[in-house]
Every structure is written in structure tokens, then in C-alpha cells.
Image (cartoon, rainbow, N blue to C red; front, side):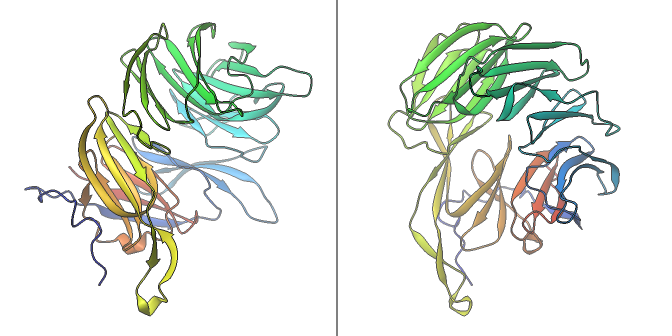
Length: 371
């Protein structure tokens, strides 16, 4: 039996160990390539149907896995969907964003389009859609802002991020803060007035690439590859710098917890009876309180981080199956049916439930997570 990779770092077992239970698992007639959207009473997935149809469908299931509705899209999906205030926005090929009603699945009005291809990801914040469009040759990049509910409420401005890619959006204190990295390596951070999409401030940062962005209480935390920088969201005033000099490439913020993934050495996958192919790396995940840099927990032997929520982390282990861990201390959640969750590609979390996409996008599972 392989050694438990968390044994050296796991804190003392609490008096009440949290346990997960597989509520159900269903096989899908398509592939899920993007993370599901967790709802209070179910989830939504985007299904890509294989040949010969090659179509994309959006399906909502309830808490028991039963289909509530399914809507065929007029275009293939090109990036992950976003949800806000009862609507879901789905970015599609050809520079279109289709908006659906979460309750009925009905398509709402015409697709949202711009002057070129979509620069993903899109954002749905405060009932409005924020989409960057790459300008066609000779045309500037544009930012389109549209109400998810009212088609006529639309704004279009020159994109303050220009040609930067891999956008991060956050909303706090009536402000939309966005950041992205340009091809020459510099990072742009902007604050936009939520009501009018007007530029409040813009900062060019000579730092290494952006890993994550978090906003709450009028403050912004920007996770760069070698530091965490805080700003006032409304004014752009720099406040503090933390974790200076650390390798934060791929780090992410989960509420008040900063998760850091450290690259490790190559390790065999499986035992001798499996051929022990040295095809995976052991990574170390470390959790810190972001505000004061206090270490909270470590986990060695991680092959890949699947997803992170406000209090849970989903990972694949080198020496074991799929696993769930509680934040911030990285305490292992008991999961007796972990063997049923093979090749997990995505996960999402709602109140006391995890939605797991497994078998390389072919299955959807629901895990109950009572407190």
C-alpha cells in the first residue's frame, strides 16, 4: 500500500472528522470541458456533443441529478460560462455571447457581439456582462458592458487593457477592477466605474505575471508571480506588499487563504505491479493567511490541483486517488468512494455539496459534504 502523502503534514485529527458521501453519479452524452456552475439546488454544465453533430448544449440538473432543462446553442462554446442574478452568459465561437435564463434555459434576446473575437474569460458581475473583444485589423480593442436582463442597456468603450490577455475581473465598492499581462511582460491594472464603465484609474506594473485577483470590502489583492500587492479599489492607491520574493506562479486566493503550489521532483505513478511509470511530478501545496503571511498547512504529493472554493480544495494525488481538503489547514476530508471519481477534470462547490466532472469530462457526480 502506498504511503499517505499527507501523513507528515496533517494536523491532529479533529474531534469531528468531516466526511464526504457520493450522492449520485451520472454519465453524460457529451463532454464537459469547462467547470460546472454550482447552484443552490443543482448545477449547470456545458456539454459538447461529439461527431457528427458537433453542437454545444447547456444543461441544468437538480439536486438529484434529474434534468431540469437543456438548451442547444447556435454556436460552439469557446470559454467558460459566467453567472449573475439569475442569468448565465456563455462565450461562443465567432465573437458571440449567448445569455440564458437560469430558471428556464430560454435564450434571452440576441447574442452579445463586438468588433472581433472574444478575449476570455468573460465576467458576469452585479447583473451585467463584461466582455473584451480583440479588434479586427485596423480597429481598436473594445470593452462591451451589457445588462444580462435588459438587452438595450449596453455600453461600449475602448478597452483600457489594450491587447493584454488572460483577464482577471473583480467587483467591489461600485468598482470593476481588471488586470491582464501584455506580451512584453508588464501588467496593467485598471479600475472602472461600475455604472458607466468609465476609467477611474490605470496602473502599469513592472512585475512578473499575474496569478490571481481578489476583491472585497473596497480592497484589491493582486497576486503576481513574486509578491501580493494590495490596492484601494476606488482610487487605485497602493497599500501593502506581502510574500515578496516567493515563487507564487499559479498561486490562487480562496477568500482569506493564499494557496501556493511548489514544483517538485518526478515520481512514479502506481506501484511496481503497475509498471511505475515516472510520468508525474510531486508538488507541495502550502496554505497561508493572506493578510499576515501566517502558514496554515502543507500537503506534499499533489499531482494536480483541480479546483478551489472558499473552504475546500480538490486535488489529484500522486500516491492516491482524487481527494478533498478543508481550508485553511488542508485537513483531509474522508471520501470512501474516491475510486469512483476517476480522471477528474473540474469541480465546483455549493453549500454542503461538491459537483465533480470525472472520467475526462464524461461523468457528473454530486458529493454531499455535511458539516
